[in-house]
Image (tube, rainbow, N blue to C red; front, side, top):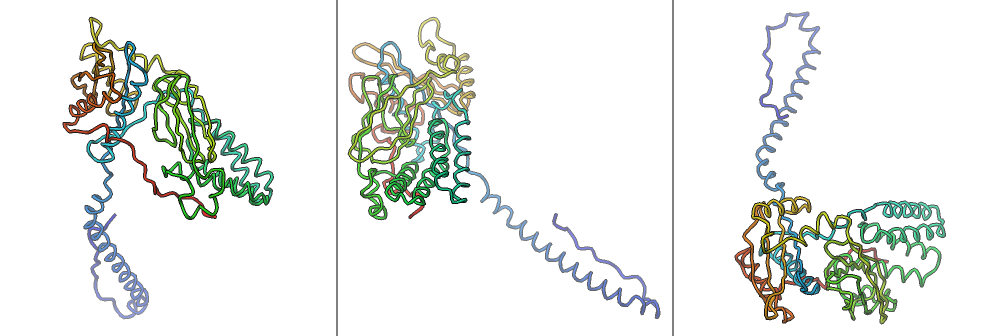
Length: 424
């Protein structure tokens, strides 16, 4: 606490001869002590005055930035509207939210609602086991036991991959790859060590969003230019559900169906995290390694979420017309409770229904600022590949009183995204 005043003592009477002599030393000591005390008190007062003067400035600098509202987007298809169209509308509306947030055109950070349906899958047992084996590998390396370290790192990687996509510790994953490289280098397995190092660099780049083949960076050409993960490769992915979203390295890249695969013919070779997500289902994911000039095929198997009936089905089955349609009061309470359960501040729910003449009816419910806004409806041409763009544009204008072209709202990755990794 800062002192408000300095205590000042008043002298009594003059001391007489012997008494003054006997206490002379004490008086001088007391005088020195008081002098030091006054000096320290003065310094403290000055320091406190300076802090008080700077307090408003410091408070303004330390004030946290306003929290962005979290926005959830859900799209549902009715009565034969293709699931692929539903997924395309859902993805594009999410792209618009992300684009507007990044450009400052509209407040709101997209929240991935699919993660809410991972209930019952989020065990940390695999992650903890991977951490334990990784720690054992470190101890083995410190003891000079490279073979033991190699075995422990193999187990660490295996248990981590068993937890994908429900575990997320990118620092641990990168460390497993890097120490695997160190271990093989200690064992004089130079070719394998170089391959593992290039995999580690590839993983680090991909997790930070850096795009393009690894050999486009001059610093890596000599090390990784001839490795199997240089150049490009092909990824082909199918799923056992329709209208699912494909994510590569945490970025939405496309849509996959039972009969229409997602194909990336020129993906950069290397290590990638691949996920398939759909509302109402637990996510599917795996860590893959693509090699130059080769193709890999995968089939995603999604399980219906354990909370499907409680948290997804009420939206999917919500009546939109006729005598069973919900009242505005009930709808407001319904959306308020759902937003609270999802942990979001705004919920945009869109329903697609077939209409006459190849048209599709676009009906949207918008719950923002703890209130349900009036229902929005518009028709679009369902026979045109991007006919839904007009509906999304009109809906966006009704939400934010601003124009946003869906064609321009796309996620962009910086080719020269900074990447941190250990250089050998």
